[in-house]
Image (cartoon, rainbow, N blue to C red; front, side, top):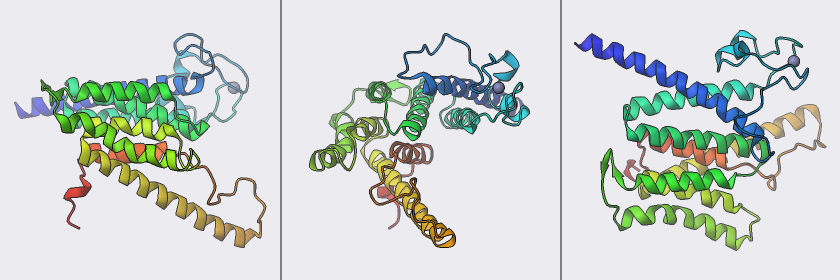
Length: 272
Ligand SMILES: [Zn+2]
């Protein structure tokens, strides 16, 4: 009986991992075509160097990239590691949500939410802008989630309703005070969903983890740069990071959400 259960579990884990990889491959297309007027579903994918249309065996998520060693089959030019990374990351996230939630309504909710988060994080990394449409979709999904306690319908109380707004409030204030120079309003729109998905304590925790991760990254990048500048005596590099550099913040916030969600790591429960 127990081995059967285990086998079933492994089988479902594999199915959701593969499903995640397929969704990831769709996210890559969406990231590439969002705001370009091109359709997400129509039009074949092709190599950007030689223009050859990709065949089915070039389009297997994760596996094709590994088998081709990251190069186009025809012209041998490098394929961006973004495709592989997004597919693998989404696959791991889907597997994680399945292991945490089982297959239920909550799985669909969080698998959809994390797909949108991956889309936002990578889009922000590439274009330094958070696509509003994805944030609004997340906010609606998150608002929907407060009507459920696990899989059971439950009427939200005042705490549930206010959580999203309270988590976003400091971002709105920072945006107002700095007139949009320190942060964009996109960050505020993004974190509304944190509060509604996770509740207030976990939602705030997620934002704090995001801040810390961002700070650690920025400091290490600055130090690394100092070392490199001293080594090579190069001081005029256009890509230099300064205190005024614009750092995409959404990826860090989303990392914070992932930590708070998967590990239910509540900052206010930690023993310090
Ligand atoms: Zn090619």
